[in-house]
Length: 278
Image (tube, rainbow, N blue to C red):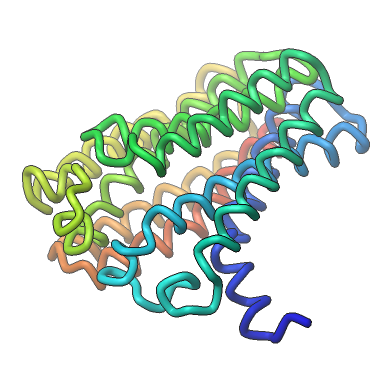
């Protein structure tokens, strides 16, 4: 029987908040494509949740030595979850997610296979490839929105939302490089922070987030997005600015706080597109 600490460890390694956000992203992509069936939304949520959760677990499996330096409290280095438990659970999550996707359609199944393969390869090898590593994470988040849209139709609104998600997560990934710089450098993970230094990583994040902020109200001007979108987009912009202020001294502990704060903005951004017409 699982103890409370074991259950919390599994929720931690799955990164339950991130996995739920991916599920919601797929649902929002579906809604932006004109979909409205609850059964479809439930299935799309589950697919994105399982594949996202599998990707998070396998990332912790391959990062267990790095986490022992950067974040020794993580489930595997702390001993709460055994490495082989994490590995086989991640594979099970990928299988469940892709199997469900094929029940939606052949195209959705192949997208799920692609997402699962990328998530696995990212943790296994590609995490050590400069820039590509950050691009893959940002792409997979944006793909969740487009994946949801494919169950109905891809529209300009789902494309805008996916671009927004890509930029947001790319900026966050650059900041995370500062947060993890010590362990990444020790184990040869190539990030902007390890190769060129934390300041360059911060500047890159600043540029990406500045682009995001400058584009955030463009849908209001071009496509008549409503008041709810406008307010929530401004909330996201404010959180982004505050996170950049927090992390400006380039200290890993401050950057950790900033990247955690950005998780709040994720849900505000998703809600903004869910209610863009109001």
